[in-house]
Length: 153
Image 1 (cartoon, rainbow, N blue to C red):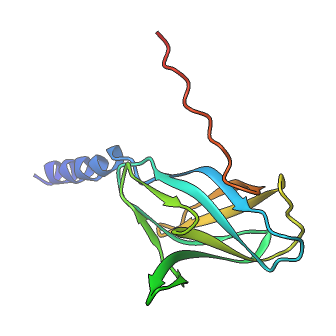
Image 2: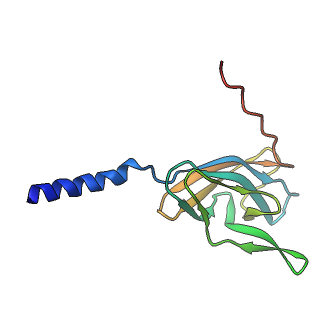
Image 3: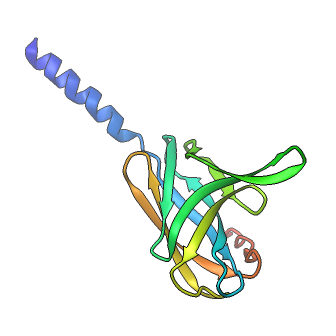
């Protein structure tokens, strides 16, 4: 009886391993170029959870900026304002768009000049303690994304 209970416990613990945990992929990452000496910039990207389980982005940081935070642009009483976001929850298989006029990254006090064409790295921290680092390109406007290639025949 004891062996059956132990075997059942082992089998139950292994069933959780079969499901893939949430995995964050960052695509189309860019930062709006600003004039030299500007104290802040904004970052945009598409964050995809390619795993089966939900994940939560709880913060972001960068060696290129003194402070990085998640923000949401909202309209209040006819005025557009930015509000901090505590976290971004992304369901398994879903994505979140960081875009102008919506959710975005506020990038404060760059440590170096970042003109159009430069790259900056941003690290996203997830609630489970893992991190994902992505390269963002500085651009005057949203980079054009090439259409997907035609599937092979």
